[in-house]
Length: 97
View 1 (cartoon, helix red, strand yellow):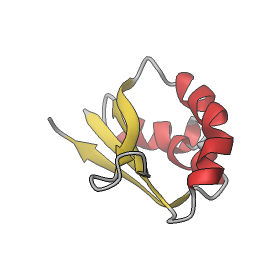
View 2 (view 1 turned 120 degrees about the horizontal axis):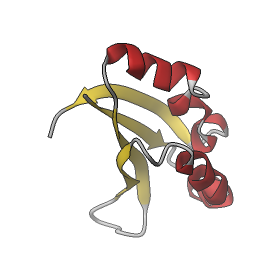
View 3 (view 1 turned 45 degrees about the vertical axis):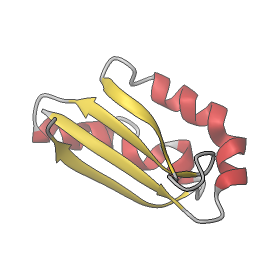
């Protein structure tokens, strides 16, 4: 099953996001074998403005999703952008394409 993680930026987060970019990528690289898609969500009106980050991951079942999000370094919440205040909200949900 696929799961969708969405970290939504605070309005004033761009400078902090840039400061943490290398740590963010290094953190996500540890999960590279499970990530199907990852990247920024851009503002249509201002394409250089980042609004949030998305990650789509393949997992076997809901129990593994909970393990992935909680046990594997709290994937959705220990990610540097989430830990350091870039995101004001992080959502984790099942996903189908």
